[in-house]
Amino acid sequence: MSHQLIKFLNITGLTWFVPLVKLATGENPSQQLRELWLIMGIPIIAFMLFLGLWSFSASKVNTSLGAIPGPSAVWEEVHGLVEAHYAERQKEVEFYQRQQVRDDKMLAENPNAEVKHRPYTGKPTYLDQILTSLYTVFAGFVIATLVAVPLGILCGMSSTINTALNPMIQIFKPVSPLAWLPIVTLIVSSVYVTTDDSWFEKSFLTSAITVTLCSLWPTLINTAVGVSSIDKDLVNVGKVLRLNYATQIQKIILPSALPYIFTGMRLSLGVGWMVLIAAEMLAQNPGLGKFVWDEFQNGSSNSLGRIMVAVFTIGIIGFILDRIMQSFQKVFSFGRAL
Image (cartoon, helix red, strand yellow):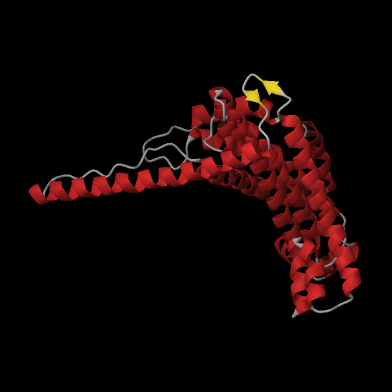
């Protein structure tokens, strides 16, 4: 049981708890305590020192929005944002309750009356904006993966295609999202017409497509490298068995290149999350990027604290997303080191 738990912790990246599991089973307590100190003790002390330095220096730096908030002030803003979320949800519940009472009264007076159900139009809360950002980045990431993996397989299987596409890959790979965004905005505005029944807002499409254009390159390159480095004996076996291309890709190429593909996807997701904030700022997609921009424009006494809450939120979510992709990478690497 303990071995399975340790394997699970290693796969999920929760290696901090491995010494605790071994300590609970009585495996070399002195060594496990030493490992626990190195893995958890030292980072906790370093983080506490960071908080102390931050608290000491924050009040000494004044900006146009006031003094830099310390850890306690930022934590208060976290509480304020969470309370505002629940207050907004309560307003939404009360809105629909009032609407239901009004509709019931209208139908009681006239059973043939036409009842209109209006959606709640309150402003999105901080937690809503986090979910919007996650939804947007995953949409862009999925599109990028669906484009990059097939192209990467083609580049890895054919040196001619790789030679043809490599110059464009090298040119477009370093382009900033700030350069893509105006082009994407103009194209989306001219091609996509929104109506009351539209599935997506233009701001969402603009942000998601910008994420796609900036994040597909790591997956494409890693997929091409993984396919081109497959053992030639495996490829020759496919030729001897006269397997068609679809079967070769399904049975030989994809299983062999999966570790590289997931490494590229992990890098792409990290790039996409980093790009998303800038894209949302300019496209005004109601996510974390817009939250930061609105607070900067607001300029109230607690705006700087809320911006710092967003900074920590972006960093923590980025860390969690990287851990999730690292877990997938370990699962599909089959124990092989890249």
